[in-house]
Length: 338
Image (tube, rainbow, N blue to C red; front, side, top):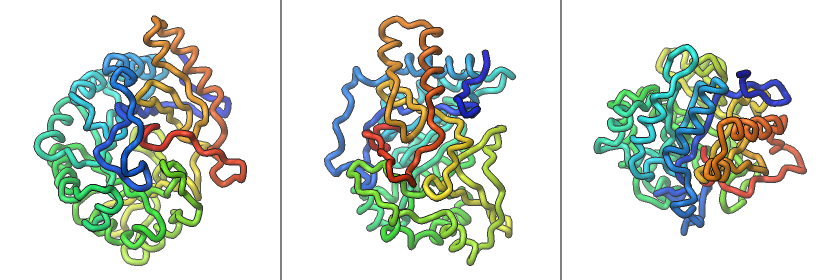
């Protein structure tokens, strides 16, 4: 079968799979303090349904990368069971698919990181938007910074390398910690990924003025710890959204995901599956395709493939955040999956 390609010639190899819309944090830029209306248990894809869809993407379309997200994926019961199922999927050349996880890290200590690694998880990204306890609590509405830091250490100890730290920067909120994050990454041996603030907050309060640009981030770090660009290669023959810059003294690297100021839509190779089985061709897509209904009404793989191919064929050229006519998705980031 040919690869999954859209009308702009972009070949898709990366599937983001949200396993739950629930989260144990209430980050201010992501969801209201009281949370959102959670999906009922029967509305969420089963592990068997996720495995079937993932297998279709890997074996029929040559997908090389699967990433589990949420919500917070570790609040889903028996997550290592799903990891073990997906870790068995192999690419055409016999190599295992690149299986990764994005988490807030608060539950990784106490054996969870090692359980995930033993089940076959290969890499991990941990979201952390402040290194200051009081600010962390303000941002997440949880006093859990110590648990997250312990989770980072647990992930490193479990061999889930390279451990990457995702830091969403919001001007006037945490942009004064850019150098603190750089030092943290250098000292802990982890790679910090600075992410430009995107209009996916549940309270619809995003403004362009809150965005801390890639150029500003790089300049502030380079002034103290000189950097040199590496590029966007993901180490697996594809592109990644983060531009990688390494320290000239050899003390590691950072990444910057410039989704707003230097969008990378022209090389986007990912699609997203929400926890309730909706396929999204773009993070900012307005429309979704209901794969859950097809799965539960007896659709065969060819039926699923036809719908998937049609969805990707209609993928637009770019998200258009910078345009006046931009329409934000009706779902927040926690509901879509990171």
